[in-house]
Image 1 (cartoon, rainbow, N blue to C red):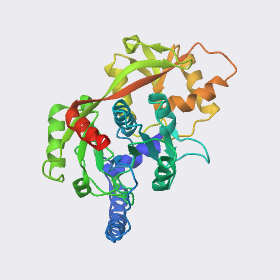
Image 2 (cartoon, rainbow, N blue to C red):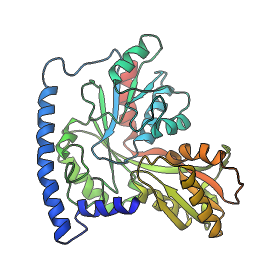
Image 3 (spheres, rainbow, N blue to C red):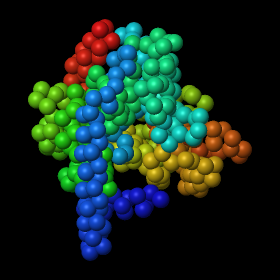
Image 4 (tube, rainbow, N blue to C red):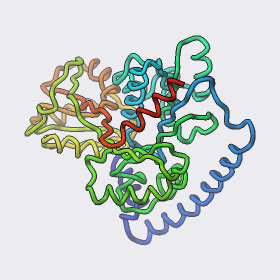
Length: 361
């Protein structure tokens, strides 16, 4: 499945040449025109009185423009912890995409690991979820996870993330297109609604490419909109039993690695940057629903190759744990999740100040 996904991205990005890919792109461009028309109608609907409604608490939205991962979950955790430290008793609210009935989805499970003391509500009616919560529980700030396109709920602060490696859903330097011709949920002009733009994974981007991207996106921002630079810093290897190992343990070690996230390239580059020798690499689609057979294959492949460690992401690990715990046969392969945290390396104080004003008001 990962191979077909990569082939599709090669068509969308223009990397794959030839008659058939060109015809596919032409057809998708026509459909993208219809998608844009639908967006225009939706924007017109939102301008009608009463179609955007507020809740009785300040709302901070964290979102992006693309389909796929930009690092929203670590950013949500960063804002939530900041609000908690400010005494705001925050809640996180999300739609719950991909969740089974009554069950938390991938992001909710990961956020439960990253900030277990902060309530997370999953409800397709996010406005009602917030109103019901504040009617009976203390709360001074609601944080919308993946909320940039959920515009029927008014927000006080819009934080938009763009992946410095894959700014348009694939590698930088390629043309940006909306769905289904590309992977943008909205045109780049939508950045004009952002109060803060955060470029993520900047530590993995070449300085020249980063400067070029910052300049290109700046044309769509309102004058004076702060642009923050962020990095995903690995902080520990977390084993199935919850014990932790320093990331330095990866240096010089031959490992197997697997993930099912929006930007698998970033995970691999992070492992290699830590000095790991990735001898086996397995990609699954984003939000993949792992089975016991999937984990058996991964562990057995690592064992057959004589590898002692299988590494995955925090997002994947929360789905792996119950499957591996139920696995009867012991294994010589140690399974570990690479825990990362968001670090804003430029512009953090402006965002801290803005959120402090919201919760104090």
